[in-house]
Length: 249
Image (cartoon, rainbow, N blue to C red; front, side):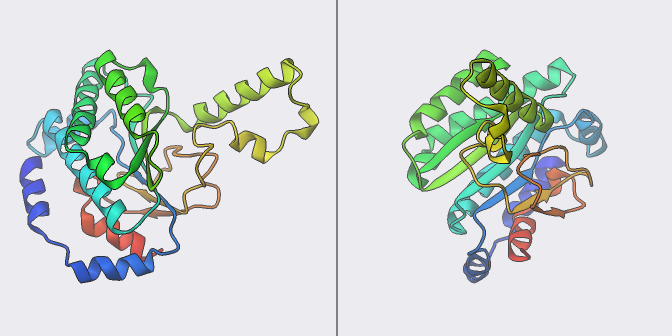
């Protein structure tokens, strides 16, 4: 069922004139974030759709690839995609997610999708604590794209927005203890300089799939972001939905 939906999606072509029109409309957009994160109820969702969780995450990989293509077509400098929260409890589900994410990175590198578009990839979250095969692919993707600066792709993996701020506070506390920072000089900019996404401007638009909760994505940076709720599960999110969201900004 899941793969059948992807087949229908793939057959719905997007006219070049629409893309060009939306490029003009998105001229002011520099950073868009999209939630495509796995959830603890993904097994249940896959079962309801007469599919498997493996097919569900394979479908997500395909969606990530067309989002990367749209980033290039729309000349969108920064794209952030939320993929894996830190609170997934099921060990088997984590293993399957790790395998599919490692497979995605392998494919992106093999097809030179990042190299051809000069996309620098960054991973936000505690990805270094995941399976060795995924961690190895992440390290290679970082190393191979570190010199690119035309587009920036951020993938949030094993990510928690509150933990991001907590980690920033730990870094700042260490600097204070080492007498490298005066507590009286700490500002909002100090926090920004120490969060995972310190190098990037805050997202102007967050496209929220699956629920009407913010899920803590880029929690510090999203204070002024426009949030668009699609009212769709991420597996039903289509290219047309992405373009409509960008065009409505």
